[in-house]
Image (spheres, protein in one colour):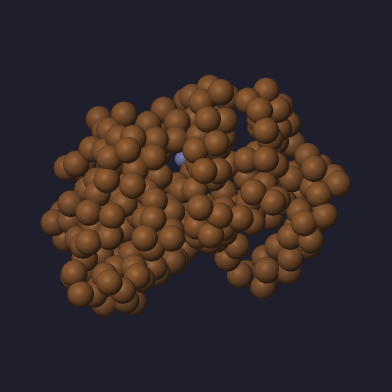
Length: 242
Ligand code: ZN
Ligand code: FE
């Protein structure tokens, strides 16, 4: 089976939208639905027809286009079981360890509470890709809004268990600000220093820093590298006040 095609595009002020597509199966999913116009434009640009929305969490910048896109296309909406009641138009709710067969590509659902209580990520193991929503960002992680620091640390550990070669698609371009903080959290990390310099160049050209890989994050991301829930809480709190 051919690997999933991924089309990445900017939406709202700093979100990324993603379409994933398998031509043979005739399926196209939008990972989250930040903005109807941006998703419709991406569909027009690719020529793909929307069949699914895969929701990571309930925040408006991830779900506000669910209803209009469903009305326009009749697509099926999949989302997180623990916060299903907050996801507009949801048809199928999935929780930890459950899978979703997307045109023969199996998405494994991992619950990653912390940013919201019901946040999930979609890991397509055979395709080597993971859609991380607002759980893990390049050099960062989501703010802990609804869950506890302990929960978010457990979610970091869950992400850390993904294969290192996994390509991780995060939902925002926050990397430059994350890098500025990260080098203060780990001043002696040479790989991080080099990456921060690289990110400066990429952003100066307007180049996206998403996707990343688990291997790169394990080397340079001070949140997933924290090593304990207590240290994670310290780092997360320091970033909130940075
Ligand atoms: Zn969010
Ligand atoms: Fe978000």
